[in-house]
Image 1 (cartoon, rainbow, N blue to C red):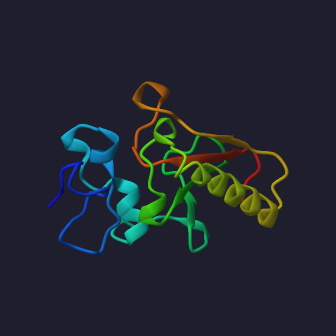
Image 2 (tube, helix red, strand yellow):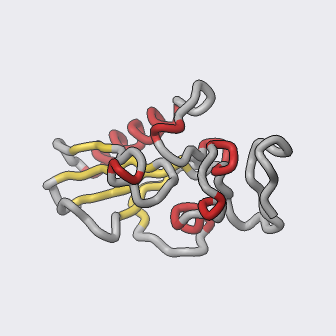
Image 3 (cartoon, one colour):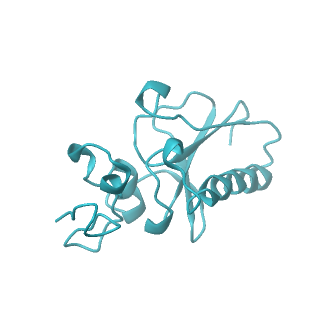
Length: 142
């Protein structure tokens, strides 16, 4: 069951097994109030090819890679959930830095010296999953 924006800050469900989106808070259409693919990956409902993990960030291989190494970094905790870079607020601006630092640590541990980081912003900007994620791409293979 999802609550109206004025009733609850977070969209919630009867089950605690998934992290849930705050789409209602951000004004997204009703059809987007269900957990995203990335919520299901974080909860373990859907498997991923994990290459990096901390208490706060998960990194996994993109299923449609655009480079020999194409990793997606996402925040794991519900309080860090943001649908898109366009929805960053004063309370969530640290999430972008958290993802970038995770990507830098991953590259360092893997010995990757050159890489590209990018955020797709909104559907017209190429964003397919409305769960803030950082693309890490390198011509160097893992």
